[in-house]
Amino acid sequence: MQGSAAPSIRRGRNVSESGSIGVLAKAVLACIMYLLSGPALIILNKRLLTVIGFPYPMFLASLGLGASFSIMLVLCQLGVASPSVRPSAHFYLTRVVPIGLGQAVTFKFGMQAYIHLSVAFIQMMKSVTPATTMAGLAIIGKMPDSSTEVLTVLLICLGTMIAAYGEVHLTMIGLFCIVMAECAECLKLILTQVLMTDQKFTIVDAVLYITPAGFFWLQLGSCIYEYPEMHETGAFQRITTELPIFMACSLLGFAVNTAGFCVIQTTGAVTLKVLGTARNAGLIVFCWVFLGETITGLEGFGYIGALTAFSYYSKLQLDKKRVEASSDNAKVDAEPDSQTGPA
Image 1 (spheres, one colour):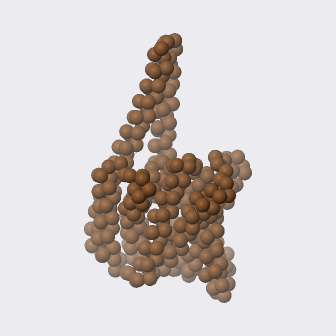
Image 2 (cartoon, one colour):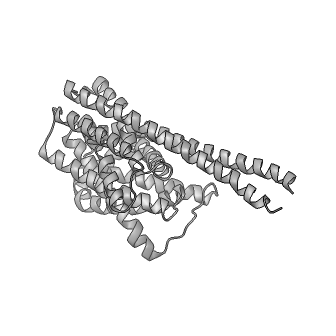
């Protein structure tokens, strides 16, 4: 009996190790996808809102959510993907629809801010979200793992505040928009993490059920505030003339939404926002070199400090994943021993 248990122990250890590697690989791929698709979507949105002259952020933001739902629905119909849960009407209205509303408010005010603020300042302000998200999670009982983790997040926020102080293009309307967007996003992220960790929503479930709620709220707001002007100015015809850019925004929206849900599921909502700090480096340099946006020395100093803190935060998260993987392997090694002991 004990001789036959040895292969079982090895098989259990191999399954655990491969599972740990799979989770880590999934998290890394999601982070890479989020880091690459996010800046591309931001640049295209900025071009549509300001250069091409399509100042309708609610309609524009809804394209990515609509495309995300449509693509996932097709994948489910083809049998490539399938939802793991079927939420009741009461559950959907009380737990999912508020996330969609928060998503809509985030997109509406966030994209409106691009009309009044520079990309650099907006990205700096967004980097403050990890601290507010961490505080919100702590309020509902999901405490950070260590005081060092809290300190690194606060240092990231400090760096972004220094950078924001050096901003050369600031309006009160733009500042109001970005603050509203950040508050709504914080609430949305907390609710999403609770849904995906406590309720065990998968990536397919998140895209299939959360994005339609956000699409509904955005389209509702767009019908009230944007459609009349869009009809008067012939904006709908502009969609056909710039169709490749609109299609690219829709596809990138699917990539960003899917990657974002995956990052929240595998690493948490705080890590999703901290990733934005690293993503900002390439985006800000791109805006400085190719779009002619001005970045002061004070902004650069603050951003370097935030990026340094982010690097250490990444190390803490990687160490935590390794500890979790080792713990899982130890549990698998111990279970067969306890089963074969009496034999």
